[in-house]
Image 1: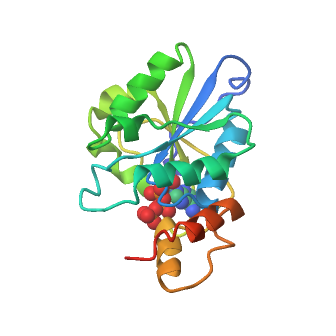
Image 2: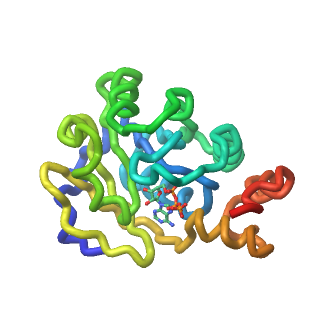
Length: 210
Ligand code: ATP
């Protein structure tokens, strides 16, 4: 990651007071260690008081992508987060149904957490798409975007009017597509995601078909 792309840094002493909520959206199809290391970086580097994982119902950028049913992705996320204080799953995009727009999710989060500083967390591969997000400017006024490095991804310049905080993170080269491909190829995914998640995938025979 080229750090000169980052337009913001955390001001000294900024992380001291008030509620600081991280919003981490994604397909989580399935959740893996890459996601969890992103979350850990955000929690530690931003000193979040709360971190919400938000599984998408349908990404506007991947209209043809068929995801595993929301109930399964939700269950795997809950298994992955079990016992982690301050981390939870927000199923609002699944309950809303249809195409999931971040502006709707963030407006709801702003209502739920009045006065909180909100951060939207994303991997470096998603940065270039920001200007295409629905009501992007309204969104930029409500949240601060946080970019976490992703192995193999070089982020482009930060598109105005967005402000992006770049974290150091602990990059882990795992992707959900790689996990799905390995399962289809009959390979183990035990080292790619938490044990309870791997076990639930096996028990429910998930991701066996392309
Ligand atoms: P797929 O391979 O199916 O496209 P994915 O592994 O990229 O999935 P998503 O659920 O689509 O996972 O990603 C949710 C968010 O997490 C995105 O912002 C993505 O950039 C980020 N992310 C996922 N894996 C990593 C990783 N290994 N390192 C950094 N960021 C990641």
